[in-house]
Image 1: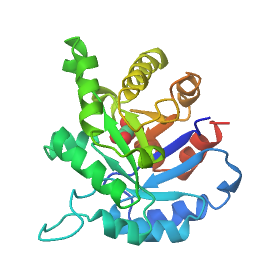
Image 2 (image 1 turned 90 degrees about the vertical axis):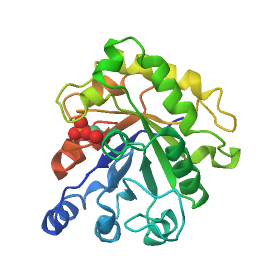
Image 3 (image 1 turned 120 degrees about the horizontal axis):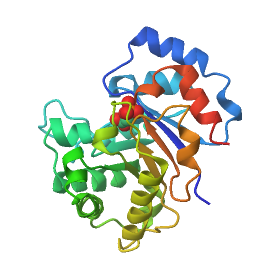
Length: 246
Ligand code: PGA
């Protein structure tokens, strides 16, 4: 059975004071049944890990290299040393703002896996792509190119996040039916990725997920959790999201 994952993506938010108060407020989370993960800014990974023991902590991005002359980059090897459990690769903000393409993202996926990090590979279409009717083939490409050359020994370390760009930070959540349609399609495509077990790979939905809409999403057979931006910043809503997965 696939375990439900609630993953907070804090983006470039949360100062030290906010992290301290968040950590204090989530001390009572030990009774939750889902996997509760958060990706803070990388400079705060160690702090959050020390302070919030019920949460697994990860990164929002990593380099496609382990080390070398890459000023400003985040080494996946060092992220692992720091205690990161996972890394988000291919978030739409990385694709759109930083110009990351599928070939680079595939290198990042492979490098993160090589360093024993779990990987959440994000895919998602823009509004124009959805309206043009091309979105299914765009998503399929993002998925298959991102997962090229995965070794079968790493199949338990891959998660997918479907995040329609038009739903991120907009308050416009995809309907459960829209999300399920894409998740089923992605699961079907995963069957063609050699080395992966399509049935066991968690596929999370992301885009304006909140405590009041998560249950409708999770009722669907192929939606295994959520990647959450805004609603993961406040401890109460993050805790509610985790509790509502029961
Ligand atoms: P949101 O962000 O929940 O604020 O829409 C989701 C994401 O960007 O991962």
